[in-house]
Amino acid sequence: MLLPIAALLLTYALTALIAVLAAAVLWRPLSILLAELCGTEQRSRFWAVWSTVMMVATPMLFVSIRSIATSPTALVQGTITSALFGVLLALAGMGFAVWSRTPRASA
Image (cartoon, rainbow, N blue to C red; front, side, top):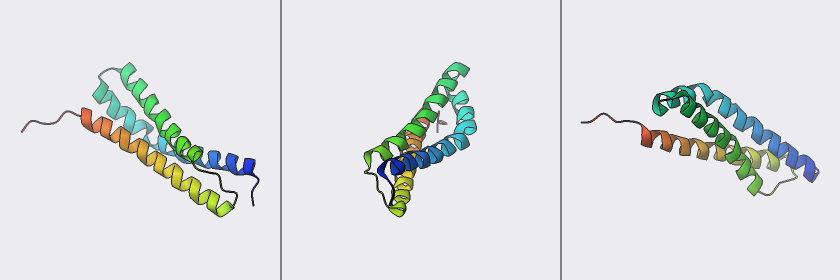
C-alpha cells in the first residue's frame, strides 16, 4: 500500500514519462509536416510547440481527473490507461487539425 502523496507523485511521473516520450518521438515528423502546411518557420515552430504542450498536458489532465489508487497494481494500470488515452486523444485532435488543413488533389 502506497502513501497517497507517493501514489500521486508516481502517477504524475509515469504520465510525464509516457507523454514526453510520445512528444519526443513525434517532434521531428510533426515539425516537417507543419513546416509544409504553415508556410513560415515561425508559424510552424509555434504549432509544433503548441502540439507538444497539448500532447503532455492532455494526459496530465486525464490522470488528474481520476482518483489516485494506493494499491500499486491499480495505480500503474489506471495511470497508464489514462495517460495513453490522453495521448491518443491529443493525437486524434492534432490528426484531425492537420487532415482538415491538408490540400487535396482535385478530381
